[in-house]
Image (cartoon, rainbow, N blue to C red; front, top):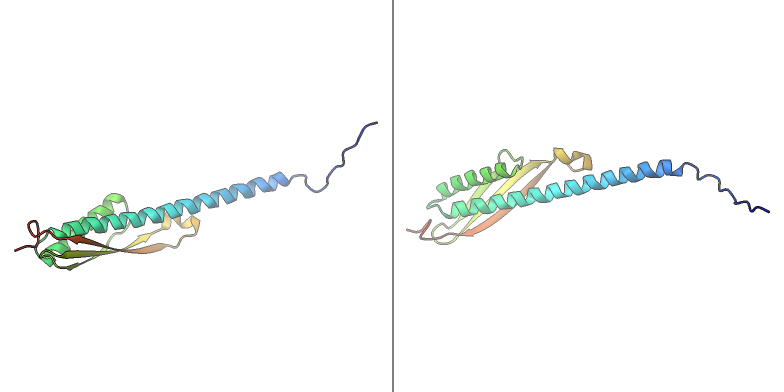
Length: 141
């Protein structure tokens, strides 16, 4: 006597639907991870440029020269790191005669390379860096 196994109806071909759905979910997850990493790297690059600009500004003797030095260094640092910020806004304030100098960098970066992940077209990042001026090296009399 042979035992007959019951046949379940309705589950034929379900793998044909599940696998593509799983692949689509995996692709969307990867895009989200890549987009998040891109934004994180962009923030770090702008922060690094602001700190480099503050170091450059702290070595100058007057505020005009400090602004020019910070702008030059920030632009070069952003270009070197590949951040697509063609004209960063660089503000310099503080006391160059032995105090603190503040550099504020505002940069609008395009996120077109991660648009598939659902990120907006651009993101504005504002970072402020503070550096202690050295009287012997910079703003002292």
